[in-house]
Every structure is written in structure tokens, then in C-alpha cells.
Image (cartoon, rainbow, N blue to C red; front, side, top):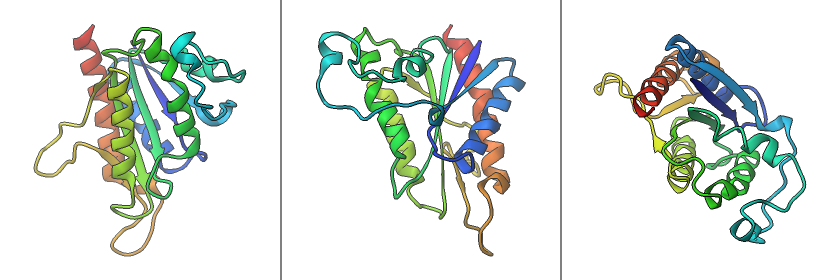
Length: 197
């Protein structure tokens, strides 16, 4: 079993740290993990030409398919992206737009477990919207959204790391609560993926 983590941040900091912790959780639960950094590839903007509707592929010549073709082969997907002015970063949005062809080729991601992680500078700094955007993408692709199910009195279902503390700022990699939740989410991805196979 393989859980694939996709980093949609232009830097390897906040949401990247959460993603690494989630992949560690997946490995603790017995799965293999793989990591895909969108920054390592050239993925152009969607041109709105609708060729993916007709040809079930994208006519742009870049590295999209080198990246996107890895998604159907994974048993579960975890997308991580920070809040960039209240929304997903451009690299992640480009990727989401351009993977429309996977849906047009016969719902290639249908029933695949999917989880999302995010980070922001401030509490309520837009990461909630990022999680919602990633979840909506998963719904459009026909995937099954997996959330955390820790202690309902103290642990949220969404994993969001923040830099803001009561006393100032820290790195998201120092947000111990978010890191713990990310690890648990990685473990849960394996549990749900096993149940669905």
C-alpha cells in the first residue's frame, strides 16, 4: 500500500512539515509513502481550451502527466498547501485545474481516499478555506474525504498548523498539536485505504 503526499507550497516550511508528519504516520501504520513536490516540475496554467473533454488528455506540453499519472497508482492521497492570501498557492491551483483530464478519462481517482493539510500565519488566516478548496477538488474527482477522528472534545477534524501563538510567533514545525494531528491523519489514511480495498 502506498500513500502519496503532494506538496503544493512554494517553500518547504509549514504545510510541508505537516505533510512529512502525516507520511510518517502512514509508515507507522504499515504503508509505504511517497512524496511529490510540485516545485520540482513545470506545470503551466490551464488555458481553458477544453481539449481534456474531447481527447481526455491535455494538449499543453509540460511535465503535468509525469506528475499527475502518479495519483491513480497511489492507494491514498494527502495534499498539503498553505494559505496564500486566503487561498491555495498558484502551483497547487494549476495542478488541480490541469488534472481535470483524470476525471474526463473515466474518473481515474474515483473512490480514492483523500486528506488535506494546511497552514497559515494567523489562526483563522485562510487555511480553513484552503482545506475546503482541496476537499471540493476531491469531491469533483469522486474521491472519499478522510478527516481526523481523535478526541471530539479537543481535536479538530481538519489539520491546520499556525505560526501565531499567545506570545508571538513560531514555526509551524513547532506547532506540536498540529504535528500530532497530522501523524494521526496519516495513520487513518492507511486504515481507511485498507478498508476500501
